[in-house]
Image (tube, rainbow, N blue to C red; front, side, top):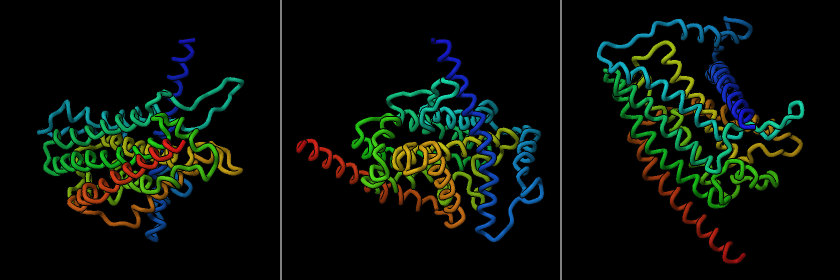
Length: 335
């Protein structure tokens, strides 16, 4: 029995790693096409039908590029930083239930690697460790632009971790559990039971924090091309740069699944749409929303980003927690 569980876990981990690595590459194609459409361009068109093989060419280019390490870099830290980013991005996925249970040849499969009762805490904790990747990369590169990118990593990701954590406290108070499966079951009554209707402010705060934590426009200050070349990744090339790239897109999928599971009904059936297809549609819309925002909004300055975090978002999150706590107490006393 234990051997079968170990084998099943290993297979799930390999499948998730392979599938999301492939989807990350395909998402770059989708992103380039969407941005091109919104900017009245064509995007990739030359390699393969509709430019679909462009991602294959990009992958070959990354794998075959020279692994260059700057002379003034701290070599061990410089080499391990991209691994930290990619590893933490995929480890955070282990507690995320992607789909409802299904059967294959009579065998029930649960699309989650580790069903732990503190899933939200685990995902947020592991994702926060991921900030050490860009931070160490910037500090070890021996480059002033990379150092600035590393410093921005510290202030941006640490600040918005506070906002995202406080934003999630209110929904968790309503559900009474840190398990993502329990949160999904809480919304199983249908469209009207989605937590977004009772916690709209928490939803907005968590989405805004998600932009900062995934380093997406308008909060992509870690590698702002117009200011600091490529930020913490300035000295990276080849597959090491690719690891940062894959980690960023894996985090984008993780945050989209978290938003769907916590606020948008998760993988419960939606009217006539099966639960598995419903969560794919929700995550796809959220990915599109991230890309749409990139095409629509300009970058913000670092001081504006910190002002927004500490003077607007965090006080709103605290007020939301107090109001939710009062509501839970009143309902509990009446019940």
